[in-house]
Length: 284
Image (cartoon, rainbow, N blue to C red; front, side, top):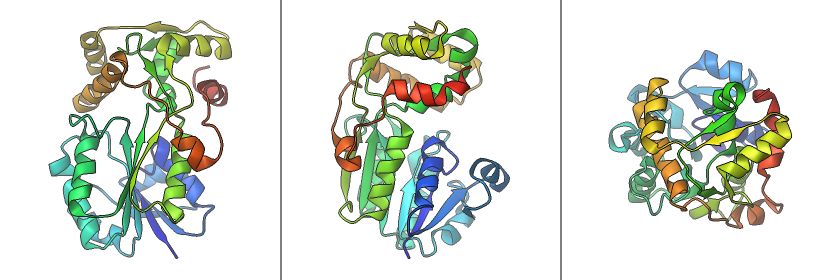
């Protein structure tokens, strides 16, 4: 039976990948750093394996018998050579047959982001891989930006008037599972976007309509955004990556729309309105 190891298992995408894989004919394992926390999020019917990118003692046992690895970069780890590459070398030594890596839109063109370095390193290792280059997650709006929306009625991000082709993590996970369990997805990249590109002014309007309370888009400078996020004690590397992503939107580089999701899932991508309707309890 196919054995699949899922890193980032307690995150937005990882937990959805786990949920979908449990319905497939495979042996799915959640690679976790904190077992108690993982059980609270994923429940007790999941097979857990201790794993930490920064602890080499966990690698060999985690990769035993693994055919495929769903790879998510931990947001706190930005030094790819130091914090990610050694574990990937261990995966190669353990004869992992394929990696499906959750990358980001434009990683093939933007060498600044860690995802780009991870893609290149996987290619250097020679492990067959699928790169899922996903646009901005809708679910960032109910995690990173939840309190801004809920308590202040604000979207606070330095994206200017640029449009973003938001994607629901439920669609990303559905694509990931297909590439993990189906034949014909051994190597290459899929660019995953929603079916519409929206400005944050338009996003605020949809929030206002669905939630029935005014939500407005605050369009700060990049410096103001970084200062505000740093004041909230978010990790500096995470703040800079967020700023880079929003700058991409500000420059008009996040508005591309592809048909990859629709072609892979045989249905249109979920819309932002559908997402807000489904998740509205987070902002009430």
